[in-house]
Each structure stands twice: as C-alpha cells, then as structure tokens.
Image (tube, rainbow, N blue to C red; front, side, top):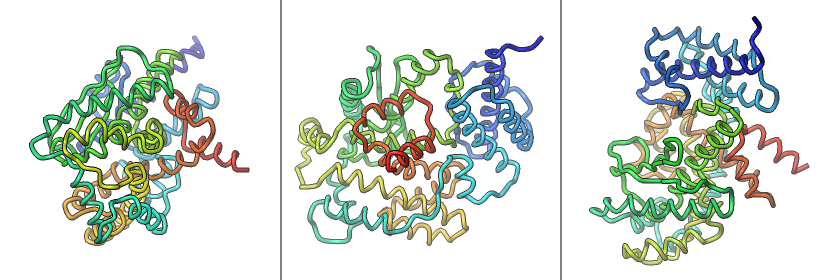
Length: 414
C-alpha cells in the first residue's frame, strides 16, 4: 500500500526530528550543552534516549536521505533543506571531517563569514565615542565607566525580576500595538539563575507562559534593561517562539517548527531580530526616555549626556570583532593574541576576555557567534523599508532564511 502525500510528509518530519534529536544527544554528551529546542512528541525523544547512539557517519547518511526525499514544495522545501544541510554538516564534523570554520559556518548557517575589515569596528568606535559621556581617557575605559554608572547597585539583585517583568510588559504592549496582535493572557515571568554561561535567555514554555532568565552572577547594566528584555522577549525570541507555534504549528500543521536546531540558518535571523528588537519598539530616544521615567530615578542614576540608542547600535556592530576572534581561534592562534584582539576591537575588560575567549573557541558557540553580527547586518539592510513593521511580522510568523532576505534586499537595490 502506497503512503498518501500527508503520510509521506508526516514520516519525513518524524525522521527529521529523530535525526535532530540524535545529533543533539551526541553534542550534549561531548559539550555538555544542548543546541536543540524540541517541542515535538515525547515518544520520539524517549526513543532516541533509549537507543544505542548511531555512528555519526550514519547520521550524515540519514541527512542525505532526507534531502533526497523532501516531500514539500517551495518555499518550504528550501527552508527545510537548509536545516537538514546544517544537521548534515554537524554530523560530518562529529564523524571527524575537519571542515574549516568559514566553510562549516556556510554549510550550517547559510551565510558567508569571511574576515571582517577592522574599518567596521573603527566606525563603531567613532560612534561610541560620540555617544558616550564626554570624558577623557581611552574609549574602552569610557565605555566601562558608562556601564558602571548604570549598573544595578550591589545588594539590589533581588529587584531584577520586578524590573524585568515591568520592562517585559512594556515591550509586549508595544509589540502588540505596532507589530502583530498577541494573545490575551500571555504571562512572561523572570527567574534569576547562577553560574550560567549567558547574561540572559528567553524561553517559551508553550501556550501562554514564558520566562526570561537573568544571570544573577553578572553585573546588570540598567541602561541595557529594555535592550535585553526586547531581545529575549518581545519582539524577540519569546514572541517568535509563541507566534510561530500559533501560526505555523497550530494554524498550518507545520510540525517541523517544533524541531529547532540552533546551529542552522533560522537562528541567524532570530539573533538579528533580537539585536534590532529595542530599536523596533522604541524608535529614536524612546528607550532612554522610558528608562529615565521608570528606572533610573528609582536607583539614583543621574543623566550623563549619553545616547543609549546609539551606544547599543555601535555595540551591535562590535559583534563582528567576536566573529573575527572566532576565526583566529579556529586557526590555532595563541590565546593571548585572541584575547588582545577582543580587548582592542570588542573593547572587553580584563574580567571579560577569559569567558569571551572560552566562547569563541568552544565547539558550537564559536559557530553560533557568527549569527549575531551577520544576523544584525542582514536585517539592518532588509528592515530599512517603508513596510518595516510588516517585515518584522514576517520574521515572527514565517519560516525565512538569510538568503531570502539578502535576495529581497538586492532586488530592491536594483
């Protein structure tokens, strides 16, 4: 008996999910961290947890078979093929293929990640110099002084959940009013975590419940409050997860959306959206005004003449220095050289370079880092359009690839 077309599609999605779960299991065992957001059937996860892990080479072959029998039409087929190519590249790496990092990034993320000229960072430094308070001293020292001026005072960490939830309510309301309708009753809480490898993370639990996790072990810059919350919440990661679940999984039956491999092209756009999120819902100096009215006065933070929006834009460009540092680390350059590069161009302090060095050299994270700068770069051009808010809605509700946006930007320029 021949399977129906819907049956073939369901079988393909099952095999796709099993492949992603198997690769994530191997990565988790070798690196200690998951690179998969999985909300599919629990029986599939249990099956993978209970089986003998297949050899990595067989997983690469399984990816080839998935590519050979894609049962979908465009553009869905192109999107899913890109995700499977990312899985295949990781399986081949696990099987011992020593693919150079730029080619590995191209296979996984669908972007070109060549060396970025330092002129990109010099321009960002110039913008930072103009946006920071007009004080004497090296730029890095001025940036760190600005951060210290806005840091939540010691002993007040217990206030962070309330601050984050207040900011989340504001960013959510603005997203709902200007970008896309959001479901009533959504709840976004905040939890403090210790010893995490991140500053903040947004997680959608399903339904109407989400949490923004904040690393209580790191100093928190209150000038970054809306930037962090918009990135992790609305219109960033939580909004994307919530809306794609409703629009794609529930609305269109696209259950493949429940399998989100993080070393894949879709996350380049997710991180790009996160870095643009504050600007999207707080255009101009609105973020600075909201913080002055709702946060700074409460903590005795006096105005210092800085331009918060421009500081955040300049710092976004400096993610490119992290990308270059990842290339240096992949070439086997000495730790001291990579650290010096991050200090010089990313303006990191001595206490920041060691964890940054671990990140740019870590398997998986060294690849993911490219998504920040290149996602920000791709969206910066694509969002410069009269229908900016419609484009943000597309990012939140459609399955898109970096190549899709670059093609649209190129077509508009012709």
